Image (cartoon, rainbow, N blue to C red; front, side, top):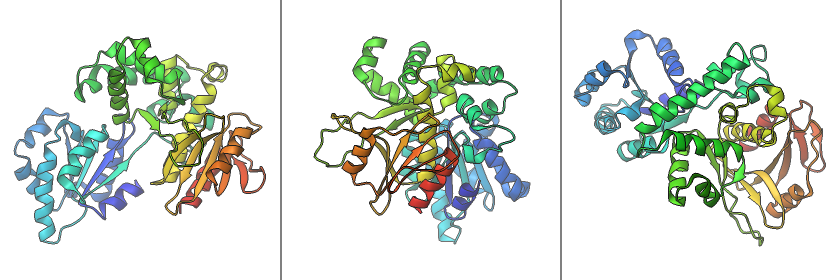
Length: 387
């Protein structure tokens, strides 16, 4: 909430982006409650009656001057951005510059494209992601629960693992049957489910579009379109390969992750922790969970991975604003042994320091400028270096 409220104090329009059920509406209504009913107007653009109010969007929104207007599900009516531009411009001329509109959307790139064309310089973007380990009360859920169930609140805090798995299956079904058809060309739901499941099976692997295309019986261009769609909906993460010049032959394909590990487990039919621990995807699933935490802590820093054809490999490379590099290895083992390839990668990249993230809680020295930390402490380590 703090980041969103701070943005409203600096910009006339704030876009709160995130997948469905992540808590965008709850957050917006909490902000509205703090301001008081007289100072807020909330419109849900999935409601026919609220959409009817915006048939003459500019006139209706002009009448709300002095209120924060919350427009939920803005992707339902992207043409409203043009009206917002005119209103923002007029209000700037009379000294009103911040806190006018809070727009909520479940699609990333399309929403960014529509808004940036109309509101360049007048809009801030805040991405709301599933809950992280530093955002949950240890009395309500532990790290293993977060790993198994993922960070969507209704899944994480369900009364049982079975109830959580049922919620995630319905989440996937709703996206496939109801939400995804809104955002682009018609994609057969069963084909997209198979593709999404394949990505879960290959969690954290460099993208092999040709193999996926052959498995689905479609073209490579179709695979690219499916992947773009899931990335745009903030359901899949495409982690780029590091692309600098170190005189080595680099792997260039991006790694692909289902962003919420609980959704990945639902796609794979994993409901219980003991099933996850014995599953071939366990290490990659843990890697995906850690990656989302690191990206959140790194802010606007560049995050990538490094791999050479000779076997050097670094799970995460962070490059800060001052050009300093920091490298991270992710281990599921409680005894975080590090491969020779990681140390070679660190030297290739001339990294300032190195961190191993593992499921324990102790900080373990691993040599000069290198240590192992648990996930919560690792986020602090990253933030300190990005500060």
